[in-house]
Structures are given as C-alpha cells and as structure tokens.
Amino acid sequence: MKITTIQFLVILLVLEFYQIEVAAQVLPAKPIDYVVVPPGEGYKLGKGSWKLTTNNTGGSIAMCEFDNKDTTDWNWVPFHVHTQEDEIWYVLEGELTFKIGKQLRPAGPGSVVFGPRNMMHSYRISKAPAKYLLMLTPAGIDLLFLEVDSISRRFPRGSSEFIKRIAPLAEKYGSYQPQKWDSMLNVTSSTVVLTQDPREPEIRRLETIERDAVLKGDTALLFDKLWSPKMVVNAPANRVGTVEATKMFTRTGKLNYASFERTIEKITFSDDLAIVMGEEKLKPQGLSDHAGQLVTRRFTNIWKLSNNSWSIIARQATIIKVE
Image 1 (cartoon, one colour):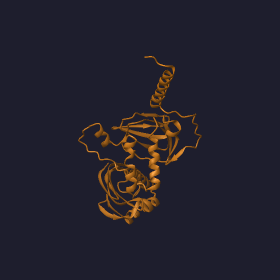
Image 2 (tube, helix red, strand yellow):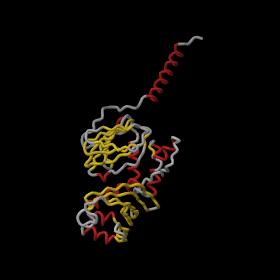
Image 3 (cartoon, rainbow, N blue to C red):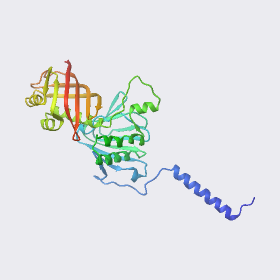
Image 4 (cartoon, one colour):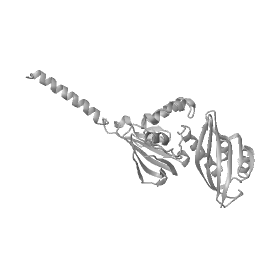
C-alpha cells in the first residue's frame, strides 16, 4: 500500500499532536518568568506570608514565611501526614520543636528540617520570637490555607457551618489525621484514636494563652476574656470556689508561679463545650502554697463557646505529688 504525500503529512501532524499532548501530561507546569518577591510582600494569611504559591511557580514549590511573636501563636500542631508533598523548614530565629513518634527534636536558628511525605509528625514553637520558612514541594496544599481563610471570612471559626465546609478539605489535599491514615494502611492498633475535631487547634491555642496569662499574672486577660464570670473551680486546696474567689487569690499573690507547664492529654467536644484534661507541673513562689517546691497535679478545664468566643466556665485541679 502506497502512502501519498498528503497522507504522510497527516500522519506526521497526528504524531506531533500526540507527542505534545503526552508531554503536557508528563512535564510539570513551569512559571512563565522569574519570580521576585520583595521584602515585606507576599500573600498575608494569619502569622504567615506566602512568598511562593502554586499560581506563581507553576506548581513546583510553595513557600511561606512565618513570624511568631510568642509561643502562644502556635502550640502543638496536631499529628498529621501529607501524602502529596514533602516539607522543608528553615529556622531563621527562635526555635521549633518537632515530634516524630515519641521523639522530640529541637531546631534552632540555621537548622533545616526535611519532612518526607507519608510520615506522621507534629511541631510547635518552643522559643519565641520565632521566624522560619516553610517550603512544600510540589506545591498545591497552599491552596488549602486559602480555602480555609475564605471559609472563615464567611462563617465564624468553630461554628457548625465552618466545620461542615472544611471537613472535606483534608482528603481533598491528601492530609490525614492518625485514625484515617491507619485505616488507609490497614493498621490495627489496641489504642483507639478519635478523629480530631476541627475546633481542637483553637482550644489548644487558648489553653496555652491561659497558662501564660496565669504565669505572668495578666489579670486583665484572665478576668475579661478567658475566665467566664460564672466560672467555678474545684481547687487543689480541697474547696470549691467561684471566679471571685479566684480573682482574690490572684490579686493577693497566692497564685504566683515561677514556672508552669501544662500537658494536654485529651480534648472532648460536646455541642458548644470543650473538655480538656491532662497534667500540670508548676513551681509556686511568694505567698503561694508549696512555694519553692515542684507540684504535679491533674487538671480539667471546661470551655464554653458563646457569641463566637470561648471562655472557661469550670475547672478542677488535684495535686498528686509535691517534691
């Protein structure tokens, strides 16, 4: 069978079109030109400024610069795993602490941390002020932060409508909490891990702020924002008190601590209530009971959401060791 010149040209055109189509599917998108982001510029989102995004790098890399003034800005990020990108942190100032399994790894100025995809991890700001770069390659999950920001502008964070709309985003961007990840890997465990409520990061942040306010004696923050006027306390001194009694102890220097650490072990939500349980280690000073000694106690804080704001309505603390 002879092929005419016209037929030969048609075949060449078809093959050329096929090669272009395949190449477009295989090769990653590239930016049209160099990207230069001057100091102080970028897409501002919370404590971060996105310098490089999916849109201006063609999807090859995303980078955000974080500038946190104190440790309350970012308590432990809940354990999670990324399936579509690797992460790189470069610490410029302060210190981050990473939790991988049961290991804690601090990273100070000049440290570079590489987090491969499919590895469960968590991290927090352990020394502030802290400034660091977070890079994600390939890009894509940066769009998750933009979606959450857009939703939070329309619905209050923690509201039922907010939770309803952000719930599908984790799977959309391939980021999972421990229970979901274990089920995907068909891992069986004797420990039951409940799916994290989207409101949990906010409660953890508020717990850190409340602890620091107690340590610093910031009565204005405690009385006006964090403690409900109706708060009741089952105190370590084996008595039940009101918020007024707690205020009196604070003002007279009987709630005065040289150090105060709080470890959250469990957060449970029931409608507009958040129940927080764990352990506290503190060193009282001055007029406080057990001044100069290390006190370990179990605690429970109950937060209530009212008018889009959380405050503690009840607290219990029991001393289990003084040394």
